[in-house]
Image 1 (spheres, rainbow, N blue to C red):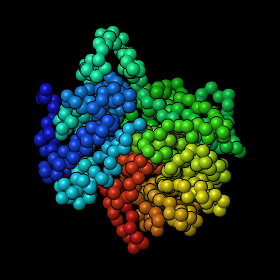
Image 2 (cartoon, rainbow, N blue to C red):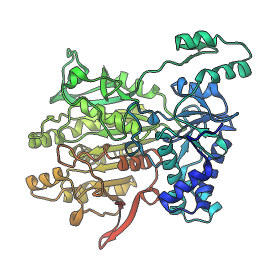
Image 3 (cartoon, rainbow, N blue to C red):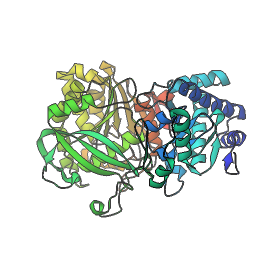
Amino acid sequence: METDNTIDEPELIRLISERTGLQNEVAELAISLLSRIVLEEIGQGKVITLVGIGAFSFDLYELMKSGKPAGAIIEANEQVYFRPSPTLRDEGGPRSGWHRRPVATVRAPRKFGPMPPREDLVMRLATEANLNGADARYALDSVVEALRDTLLADREVRFGRLGILSRSPKDPYADLRKMEIERRGFLPLIEEAKKNFVSVEMESSVPVKEERFEVVEIFFGTDRERHPRAKSPAKRFGAGRGNQLSYGVCEVSIPHNHRIGKLESPFMLRYFLQNPAKHVVLMRVDEYSASEFGQAISEHPHKGEKRRALIFIHGFNTSFEDAARRAAQIAYDIEFSGVPFVYSWPSGDKVLDYIRDGNDADQAAIYFQEFVLTVMRNGKFDEVVVLAHSMGNRVLGETIKLMMSGHRKELERMTEVVFAAPDIDADVFRTQIVPPLAKLGIATTLYASSNDKALAASKKANGAPRAGDAGQALLVLAGVETVDASAIETSLFGLNHSYIGSAVRLTADLHHLIEMRARAAYRYGLAAMSNPIGHYWCFRP
């Protein structure tokens, strides 16, 4: 029954129109299309996720198995069950600015069939509403953003034929009772479960009590010095060179009240005060031999029909601990459906170690090449995406040159290379790194910024423009999609150099690029630009 706290569909349409300028008819068609598509897909037995909103299913039992917590399941209407997205849970109260993720896309979690690609949804709306593709994409994104903001404001919302959605469960046991009596055919011990708030035994144990954080597994490679007797996972690898390649896997916590783009940590005394329920914490590090590593990644489960890998290479002034934390945060925030990896070269973890870090990055290329070959030869991946940040691009650039001369076939298996704020000489990037990628047809993206003070300092120290510069130094090259990220405001100790992974809008763009495989022309929030050299993209102010 609808209450004063419930926004009905006409009010939702009005709010979307006032905020975006969309015509009421277009907003109504976008709502109708999204709810209709979800109904069509769950009618085939799938559990479907509307990214940033939640999961839907006709089968409560399958919905509970597809993710936790069971206690957050509510009934959207008489037939459809809804589980709010973990990103809607915020114990500190609604903060929609940080949670906002305008991604109108639907997908199925692991073990369930895929949804139509996002661009298919755009084309369907464009046809039904007689819109061009950009306007249809904007309409879909606007609907999802309005839904998120409404739910984050602790209001319920009627969403098309899917019924009333809410981020706050009222009585999850009512759903368990309904499911077991009507679908399983026997009377459960509901009262006992309510007392203990643990689980109800059915065909398998259904968890009701939840942890206050998620755990992200990150496979790693590093040529840092080893400290195998270190008691803390953060101290297992130091800042010095190890002169050998080490493999392993680590576990990183992501708290349920995590904000997109943030690496939550205590203000001070991290090792004493960090808490997985509140902070992004490196919880565990396990080392593997090369053969154990190969077997582990070959057997690691994945979502979707294709096996996909994302390899992140960190930048200057980064410890092994923070490299793992950042890799987990990026994989979690962009909702990567494949297997995430991090390569950690021996950065000194000190702002004043710039020259030393540069030398250590250059020497790490031979070890990173070995790591990439191990991943490609053992992981059975259909797609491999490499994302490098800052000085980590030196490791990637040198490795590309090495592989072009000795392992060209393996290099061709890279499906996307992303250079983020690359601290590489612009001429070296233009003449030695981009041509091999363009020749092999490897999709390449360059994120640059005119506000990056770290790159400005690097330019002064090295005496030449950097590939990550924007403004008059912006590189626009054949075979490269250049994105000017100058409009994104972020900072790292005032250096404006951590915008990869820490800016909400850029995180959404990385989701579309890496997870959805969408080119710049199809990514909402980017505007096409041109200069005398060619065409590029920038974030709308």
